[in-house]
Structure formats: C-alpha cells, structure tokens
Image (tube, rainbow, N blue to C red; front, side):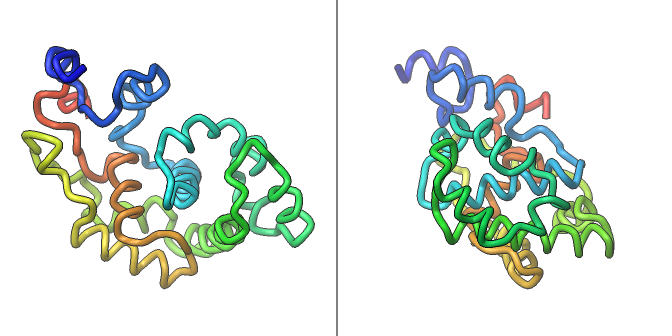
Length: 191
C-alpha cells in the first residue's frame, strides 16, 4: 500500500477510501472565505475531537440535515428540545457537550459576523493569506502551531468550545489557512 501512495504522490493520510480521497483532492486545503462555510467546518472539526475525520466525513450529510444546513441563525436559537432531538439522531455524533457547543458556536458566529465578519476574524489569524510551510513529508506536519494556539484562544474567548490548538490546526488545514499538502502531492500547487 505504501508503494501506491508513493506512486500517486498524494498525501498519505487520506488512504484509499474513495470518500477520503475525494475530500483530499477537492476540498482539504482549498481556500474557503465564506463565513458560513467556515463555521460549518469549524463545527464539524469540533465534533471530530477524540474521533477520526473519516467518521465525521461519513456523517457530514447527516449533520447537515440535523443542523438545518448549518444555518447559524436557526441553530443559535435552539433550546433543550432541539438538543434532545439531536441526542436521538443516529446520523450525527450524539455527544451532548458537542451539541451544546455547536449552539454556542452559532451564537458566537452571529456576534462575530455582526462585528467584523466571521471570515475576516478567522483569516486575520494568518494575515489574510494562506501559510505555505512547504512540507516535504507528513512527518513534518505538526499537530498544532503557534498560529493555531492563538486562533484557539481567540475562539474560546468568543464562546466556542472543543476548539483546542489541535482542532484549530486541523480546521486551518481544512479551510486553506495553511497549505499542508506535502510538496510532492499533486494538490499542493492547486491550493
């Protein structure tokens, strides 16, 4: 299997699962500047805490259905009734703390969006331009960085939860704040 990855040049983390490969090739690391899409990804990354990303990816459509297509205006007003509904939904990760965090995150998103724009808030942590660290191998990719720690602190100060430095860095990678495709990966230059 290692030989197959070396021949393709693709980042090894995505393996051979078609869903994961498509995510790697067409989404991961692509610059996202839409505030609502950024909030959706951050929310999904928060649900990933303690799990693998493929678990979340396989349930992404279930999350979208359960969370009103990640409409923060809707989610921000949810109460105990919606929490109980979500706790019974097998299409998502049924973790009360993470569900409550998603609702608090929607409320924080709306405050930030009204104040300065959520995209501006997020992209301000990298000066508006994707970081290009030029990793030669996956062993060079860190679990978190000082920029991720700063983003984590800022998100927590705004009321977000499950956004430690590791989750924040995974979010940064996913939405193109940092290009962590290895330099030999065909997607490196594309992002």
